[in-house]
Image (cartoon, rainbow, N blue to C red; front, side):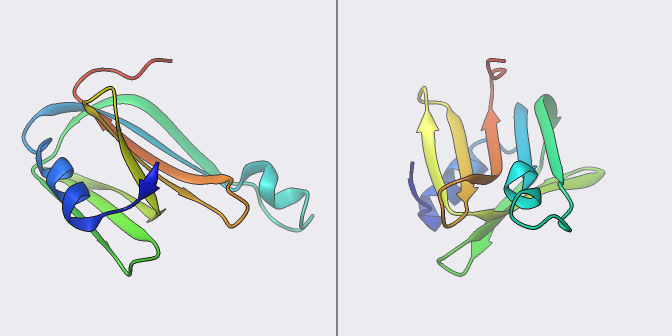
Length: 117
């Protein structure tokens, strides 16, 4: 993966607008939190192969971390803390954010075909 390039990622996001796509969204502080601070709460979200259609897509950020939002007719999907991206298998947009130690904190992936599971 490479650092997010705002214009390129925005272009890829827009290529999915108006299409049925599959979303993978994952966030976690999981085991990273409780073993460092016993008072910390473990939290996380994981969805995979949720089929959606969005009518607007936008990525914004300060050059260090980014937020991507997908607007649907009746709601939003967004991921914050994204730092890296790549295209996988030529068609799957993969975006992720890692902490200072390189551990995954957030992932948002979009594809016109289901993700392997």
